[in-house]
Amino acid sequence: MSKSTPADLAVAFRSLARRRREAVDAAEGAAVTDLLGQLDQHVTAAATLVGSPPDADAVADVLTGRPADEWDDTTLDAVRGHATQAGSVLRRVTEAGPGDA
Image (cartoon, one colour):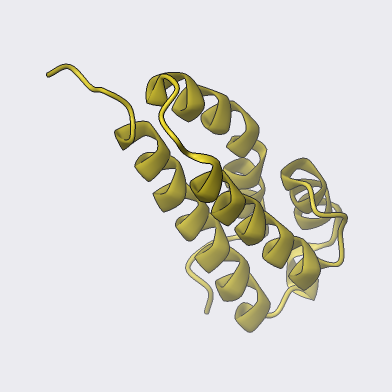
């Protein structure tokens, strides 16, 4: 059984745009282009898995638009992996900033 429901994953993907803005703001001009590219790769990979355009909100729409019992655990686990990795990338973007030193 998957560790995340489609609704849980939709929430994670819907938050990515806001979290991206917050992370870029926290990075305060640090070079994060490569990290943002990695983030986009995770969103695109998740979109491919669910059959949506490569946009986090579109991924979320598909996740909530299909009945939960029509999802298989393998796909949900793979999508969860991309959501988790996207979150890790966003933390690294935030950490790229000057911090409170």
